[in-house]
Length: 121
Image 1: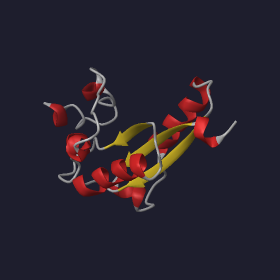
Image 2: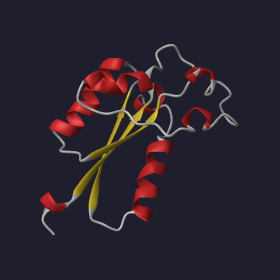
Image 3: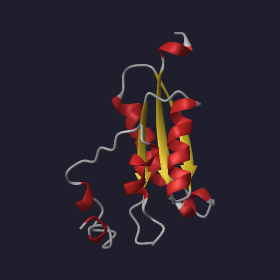
Image 4: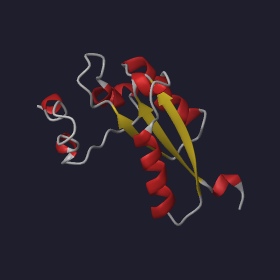
């Protein structure tokens, strides 16, 4: 099958520590693993890991669309209590991309990360 018929799915992890190599990107890998099990059509992953921050997130999203040709970008990260961890609010900074969150996202992970719910109120 020609490359132009492959769906290009971006997996963008936003994390200071993962981007610095301090720990493995588990959530990005989990998304990729899920897609491999769930999708039956032909696709290719475009994986990026960037540090927290408005500029790094906006630039990664723009690059993944304009340079990498991503048809869809799934993001993970940005749920920690650090002051720089404002990722979710910066998805719309590109001015061209839509932000969509599951209704239960604020409660995801609160059993392991008690700060997660507070960030969304």
